[in-house]
Image (tube, rainbow, N blue to C red):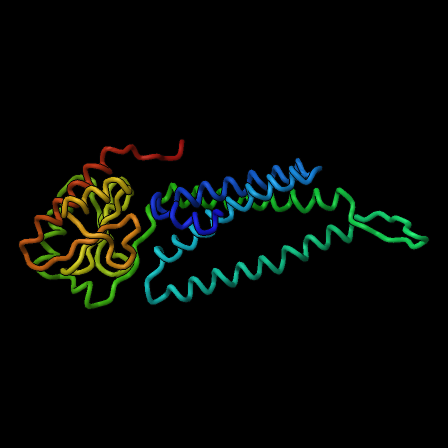
Length: 272
């Protein structure tokens, strides 16, 4: 049920929150399975919880991988993801078999001695999976606290060139605000940051991309101030196409709105 439903959930909530929720549910399901597996009902309930977590985590992770990878390298990143998943699927049965072979008891049936895995073997299998699942929770929380997922790369004809009158005017105005810095974007162009948070970036003189929470994103699109992202319209990013120097003020207004929104948020730092 949650296999197809997870796609709808992610289109509404984005990729990060379902990923965090999915990894937490996965970890809870595995720990519960390690502690409570004495009846068929308990097994079924724990496996259902585990499956819900897997559905949300897998789809959310795939989306984040795609959105965080330049378009020309997306095949490589998805291929590596599949490879790592296959490696994990190969190692896990071997570890489980090691536990089941190492912990056995004998039963005489019709005069023949037969061996079966003990309860300790299954306890170790479930506990090992539960402990490893905490790593995925930690990674999901790290992604959640780091930044928005990056937007996809654009083709050269979509980005245009840097160093033009349009790009220089936009950079001059945005960088004049206190606390704003800029760096070359790995997707081409320049990205702006404030409070160590991604404000968005310009891809040459033809296109600007900015990330917003889902509700704000929908309001901006409905008001005609931006368009859905050119490549991933259901992501949390919006795009603005530049047709002439008259569009500079509209782009600066979007960045100003983003600046005011992010500037008001406190910076979370580690205690000294």
